[in-house]
Image (cartoon, rainbow, N blue to C red; front, side, top):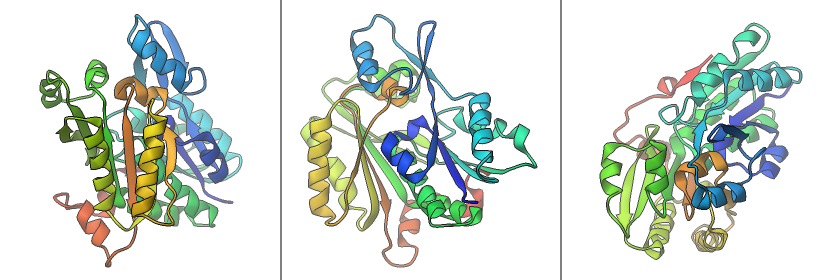
Length: 304
């Protein structure tokens, strides 16, 4: 039986992509006061951003519960006895812990591997795609796990926020970011490093920020996969995809929407680019990703 691949909704994978690759998505939660919504199931992207800007209540978010994962695992276990579950970075969410706890009732019945992607949004999405593609090609669970680990090492993400206001309200940023929040008329650039969301730069205009996103891709050529996500800027996302296509002929960027769970923190006007690097010289992509990290594959956070 084929290995089944599962992730959470912060991967921002379009439903048609997930369906085509056989990926199960467990939705995170968005809370407006005492009302709770499942990410993309009970609340759409458009509704979230409208309420985020104009609504009287600022929303909060929470991870999927262990029970949510248990239910998803149980369903998949009817089709396979091997599941690979990939979550948003554990340094940003309780998702990883929920995914681990959720498999307890299936121990001995189904092998379930839970992996912390150390990424988010379409960075997590590309890592999950790499796993699902390996599974669809008939890869064993160990081969799928190896594909995940390699994708983690070779996937980078860069995001432009139109403002830090929403991220600061959500309490997901460090004190350094809070100091930056006092600065106006700047566009913050952020990235994921060792699973932490960290500052990658500041620019004055959106035009310059988009230039930086293009430069980010150019510095990582050749690339295996590219994904772009936006919150409320479809035209800019399409324009960015066109510019990237000129840099990477023959590669089509996946364009996605930042969903409600991440949109609460990213806010309107956000743009994200994720790349999974291709082969250069042997191990060069891995070496560049590891700059300053010094870790080996077994040390990446994974749980059986």
